[in-house]
Length: 440
Image 1 (cartoon, helix red, strand yellow):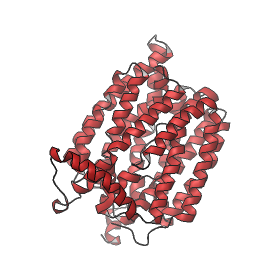
Image 2 (spheres, one colour):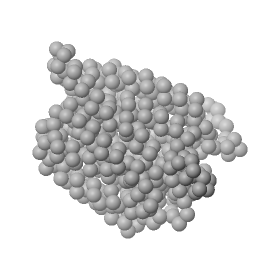
Image 3 (tube, rainbow, N blue to C red):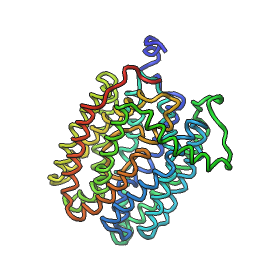
Image 4 (cartoon, rainbow, N blue to C red):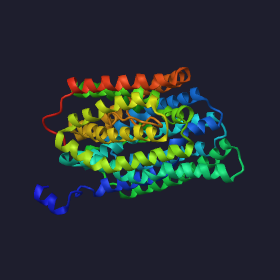
């Protein structure tokens, strides 16, 4: 499409077809899951878990995620994207049931294992997004695909906090039992939303792999699919150039330390700083509003500066904020820290997404995304999100270590994580090179 025609159709001309459907589905997911996910660590504690169990449950979920990721990436390239995404979304929605019926932290561990195991369609969805975005607008495209769900996600934690506060003040139950009742209701809504999202994906997504490029498999081929999927890992790693291998190494390093700290931002804010559970929802509201304002400008920065410079802007700012989090003294300092981290994410994620998409040809995206994901580095302050097969092991280890380390000394978590992110930023600076020509 020519530049003149793009201007005639408007600056968001690429929000159509698959991109529009994917955004609508992410909006629905954001509205439901973001009500409850910021309070997952509190839910574990209310059901009898400790800080160590928070780390353990996070670690179990991350390990489960790696099991089928290569299979999802392999099938995305060989069979196609859409049916894999749609039918797997049904299974993922069903995995929310243990969160609804849980009466102890062990049931939550089972639910987290199943939920992460059944997210193996994520590489196919990432590949479909990259396939459907033209190279010249990927920075803006990825930024908008994050920003629109974020617009809905802004209010969701606030709603969750108010829901918990309502049950705590009106139910006559103890604080923990009221929180459990509120969270169970929120998980029930998320389960039903998941079924709706699955329908929309099956009904409206369009395949980007041509019939002559795809293969047919039966249930009897399942052992061969597993074997070829895992063998493709070796071939894919060999295919990567130095810059892409460096990005994988950076993701593995940061995954360990981000997963180590992710579940404990809310716990530290409540136990050490004194931020209440409803106030934690307000923190997410404030940070979400500011991040939404900056989302599109950050995507435009990626397209105009180049992905690498944009990534460095975020990765050199984030370590300072993470280090200073241990010195927060109240609601507003916590909100400021989380807000700056949110803005850093808004430039790092589209930056990495653009850089990785520009490096990988369409016919390899499913398999490569199954290994390294498409978001690069993201600072999480709840559950650890995303990644790929090569990212899951260090993230799982980091989550377990985080539980042990936080129980020993909460402040060490922020000190160590900040140093690791700074080290990773230097690796980007000196070892990563942008491709001369972007892959379509």
